Image (cartoon, one colour):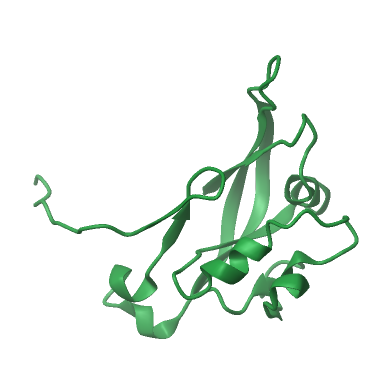
Length: 148
């Protein structure tokens, strides 16, 4: 299972949430340091009939188990089927968000990142979106033995 929250804009669903609810399928991509600039371009406010993927110069790639295409530049992507969607929050001046829960039906991992059942976090160089224009890179890593 995977979950996303998609902030509403002025109380209205964004295209992403509307598309997920309409198609009942979606792809989640892990953003990395190499593609973050292009991925950021997909946040452009375009009319619903224009492609943010095309605007950003990203490459659509056919999915294996769903009809929604993925983005070839993503080192990791998850093909998902919608399980549940909820509108949460939102009161007064707070716009609320769409909370989406999906079942991962297929995953794609760049081969060189995967070894002995583990993903190389340094090679992935994942980037997380925070709020507004802010992103974060993976910081210092450490290990703690797990209890038996």
